[in-house]
Length: 331
Image 1: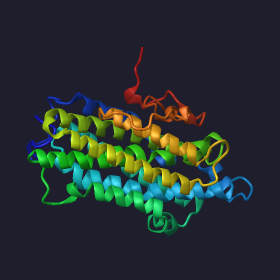
Image 2: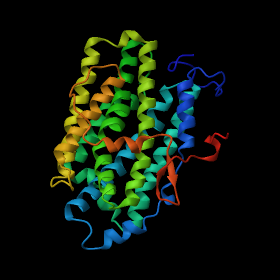
Image 3: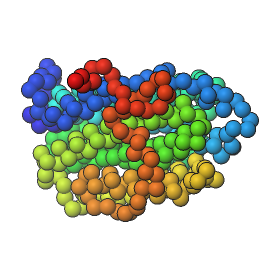
């Protein structure tokens, strides 16, 4: 049973499993379950209301990231539910997409929780994409990239349409979830490392961990479609994907400069830009494409936030080797 172009109306015959990797992503998502209300925001409220803890630059950075992510998570949810799901016809892959859609709902709920807890104006946060050019440009870039799958007449029949579908999957999974989120992740976790806004920082850690799973699933999905339809992976198409990655990197670098123009303690926009380039090379490698930037990772501590075997220890309020009961291994 191929991963696309099978029957869309058969009962969900999830057994036998044809793609064990899709099943494993589903199980990993369940094991990593969390909700924003589990994270204390008391210290964040105190710091946000204080006049001497956060600089104007840090407040700007926080608002920019809440503004971008609040709309970006809605875009990702729309992509899954309204477009990708109907074209991916394999049952176990669809099961993971349903799990991912739930996680996107959790991420959206996170920003509701943050706005409510800090007393932020939701109009200011959710309309930033209309006021801040670097946020609007990123959103518009992804909307343009993924418009094919939203066309009600679009199908994945034939090599040309499969190629268009993979193009849109790259736009959604690799560029949106794999590049556009990562400067913001680094900024918020850099604040947390300074013991500032640690509640929001912990929630961003969880979101980043989820997104790392989403990205890995998306790359395996793309590579599976490639393997089943190798004729689509032409040299011009590969060059097009590299070009799209380069464009996404430039959009994300501009966003980094806008959100953090004055830098943080020991960090500045140039370092965030280097991190985006490092991340982009990893995405290219995951698709079997050559590196473009060859940057070293300026933030090696960021890898700690994506350890998928980690959960929160609520007594220590930090990430440790804890998982839900169903995923524990007993001696």
